[in-house]
Image (cartoon, rainbow, N blue to C red; front, side, top):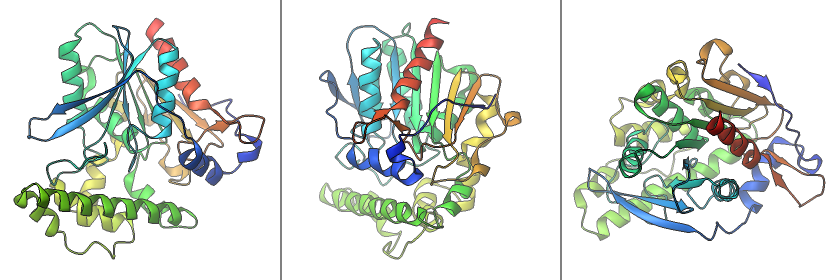
Length: 331
């Protein structure tokens, strides 16, 4: 059931853009000392890099980052630190090509790519069949997580999940990014995405994967792409087997999967999120009985910064997500 939350933005960051930009640019913190990277070989002869945090046999939380993010993103490292303090292990999945090294195929990641989270879950579950698992996703990673949970229903065993700042309807979000100040975020993200694709092409050529590199060359000149509609039509749809951008958005928006989710799941959305509009937030009738939607007036996009004193921020998501997971674990 949708409920209002007690979160109040810091008075010195009481603006959706400040809430969004401040942690993205200024939240610099070292990861927990116990981080260990593992490379998993995928069935299609590629790889995934996973950053594990914590040791022992305590409950394990899978973390999924957002678009152009990684396991090094401040919200991932901050949550890993908070979970560790509560006695929970975590493993952060780097989507393909996001770990600091391009992946070996033209295939990238996108808002509906659930094959890699399924592969990671199965790998971890085979190692630890009795360990309590949970999962958390941010932005694009939240959309991936919710789509996966809806697809799998009761075929996965998790004690809880959480998703933050989710683009439930990809088309609405793409439209929003073409308006007002949101175009600043759009332009920065698209520049990073084009650089990601170009770097991947050069890497594939360098390692002799000419067939894979040719798939990217066939996309043509990407320099004139100015919107997510164009990028997702020219790049995502063509590389991942969708008919076009409309087919991609229709099949991969997580909103249609919410009714099928049986895992206790926390959703956190800010009304002032500059990446989306109120229309994106699902209504009560769209949620399964396992879902708990918390709506905040402020918080921006994966921001949710509070604190009385300027430049001494506190990050509400670290607390809220940790508390929800612990509550579900012990209930």
